[in-house]
Image 1 (spheres, rainbow, N blue to C red):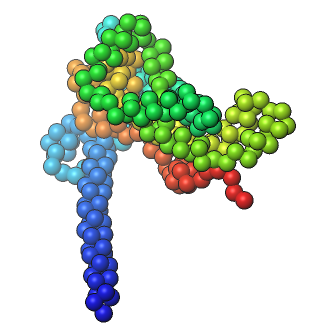
Image 2: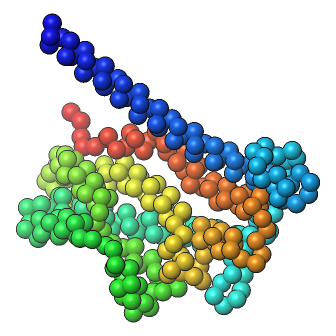
Image 3: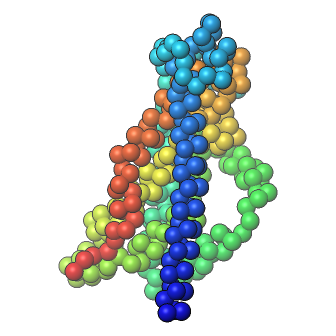
Length: 297
């Protein structure tokens, strides 16, 4: 009886803890939802006038909906380049596309290839040394290395140049570790069969292992694309002449051509469409792909 009572007590404590955590997460989710709804309402509000945002900042729902702010976002939002010229919304969108796609592709490709070499050729001593070096690198503090990193990139002539994307060809961190773990646990049955048929190492990689590892590659490409699409600090520091939507909107808010919060929020929600759409399309597959791996049977 005493043991049963203790068991019931533990179950009750777990339930109470679960409900408390659920309540905290619900409050947090509602606060985020409120900010999104408030931003959407501001984006369809007139800036000037009796019922405009300037005179009714405390009102959540506008009295007159003005969807023209979304059209004005394409015409009025711009960013000033270091040479004094202006770049418009479509120019910043193009910069976001090539920067996000290029950075994500290079980062995922380099991490996958290094993780593949370390995981599938682990009988070599140098692969174990690479794995240990990456773990050691993750333990090292990165604070205070920004200035040194900038000097190195500047010395290579990559500042304010599209070739800055070459700095994204680095491997390490959690992306390497998770990809490595995925590849280590992937069956080598097909590798051995292909090798017996005379397949080369490159053929085994491209035709067998890459398709099998495509779930984890897709996951990191989607996550990396969203992260690079929303990255604004990198462009402000290293690529001032190529502002993306994220950095361009930051510059627009502080510029002389700032057209007010309604147009600004409309531009923000337009810029979020690609990342949100990508996440909604692959939402279920993101979770499924993280749990799929190896061969069955």
